[in-house]
Length: 261
Image: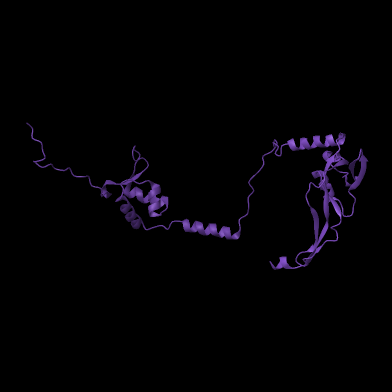
């Protein structure tokens, strides 16, 4: 807020007596005016009377034409008609500011709007060619399908940084399983098979956190690999290592037995 409060707050009203026109111009003409060098005339106005009505014609300065212009710019209409519309009962003014707001800027009133003007190009051969070029440009698709003569390599290898390389090496080391003693692994397997009779090799690897090659080596000593339907590709303990006992048949009491007639 401190920066906004600095500077002169006075308003120079010496230009309040000036009458100005508010002109609406086509986009291509406004671009030409904005790109014109400072102090360079942008055209001439011809004001005449026709049957008591004021007619205003604008001719664009030839210096605004680009010698290397495209076909559309080459057909720019140089003559334009100013359609006077009056002020419409509105009270409009033009103001300007100069300087840096942080250091101090000057505010001036440049004049009062007494006339609204619509700048329209004169319909001519050049103008029709300009509109045709604009319509062709607007109808042209922004994306064009192009047939390639060679394979485009979309993947470009990127060299990893030193920190990323060290992180991957350390992560790989951490993921390596620490090999147990054979007796410890057998005990871990026996404990697992106390819960379930069948396991696949992936589940046993997750439970014991041992390399698959070492795990299979121990399983071949104490287990059987099933190929039959129902538990295909799963391991179970050999009969001599199993603790799963078959349920004994229940005996019915004499009172529960039905007597035959």
